[in-house]
Image (cartoon, rainbow, N blue to C red; front, side, top):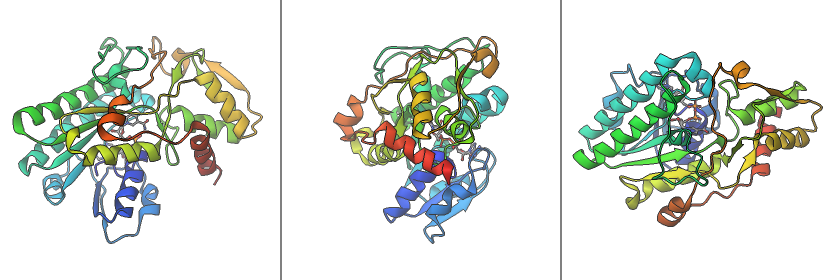
Length: 315
Ligand SMILES: NC(=O)c1ccc[n+]([C@@H]2O[C@H](COP(=O)([O-])OP(=O)(O)OC[C@H]3O[C@@H](n4cnc5c(N)ncnc54)[C@H](O)[C@@H]3O)[C@@H](O)[C@H]2O)c1
């Protein structure tokens, strides 16, 4: 599990341990935290390696020891991408290249975590796996994340075609749950922390942009199901929920659920991020392929998921 101390990776690690598997985590703790794995351990079936997939000479040995590689390590979050553009591109392209090269030596199965960002500015509703990626100009570094993840997908699929490596790809849409941090721009933990602290809940832009949110339990369930299904090899799957909500509505729900006195304020994108910042107005997945090929559907409703995040930040 690369990125196993991160938000999604720690939940995936826990689920695999609960199923009786051995999990070997490699994470450089750049955005992940050791504490994220507290609920998973201590366990004799969990080993941790606090180092980078870019630098660690042991990556080959670690991959040689396992049956499946879940590749989640990445620089994630709009703020991080804008603040560290070089590291983002290096981690997200070179990291995946290294993981695939190592996996190819022993023909190990690889599950690559990709993102709905690869659709870029395409606002088809809902977005299907074969829809076009519409990226903005290279002068706007936000799109480097989408571009790097698209290269990861191309590379993964190329390994399937030309080397016969069993690779499957999941494209996560906005995933939420306990342990996600708001530090790098993620909207739900940011709203919840602001509401609980009585600080203004800051909506970027006019708030009429829509997103769909998936609980991390569903994202993990879908990831495991994809990684175990023979028909998933060489395929890409949207992982998300079809439920669309405006960010204004999300802010109102968080305020209500936390009984907060915070006011909801709007902050221009130029102030929140950088001048000329581009954000898609809509991003909703078509999850038919996940349901029909893999047999998985997300089941956790938004309010229940938000409650889990609120409880996490309260304690
Ligand atoms: N959370 C979401 O809504 C979402 C949406 C789309 C895609 N994703 C993808 O899912 C994966 C996990 O994201 P997350 O939300 O859990 O983010 P996260 O930041 O919590 O997890 C990423 C993990 O990778 C680790 N990492 C970064 N660079 C590394 C390196 N060079 N070597 C080793 N470890 C490194 C970080 O320390 C962190 O623990 C990522 O690949 C991300 O692109 C997440």
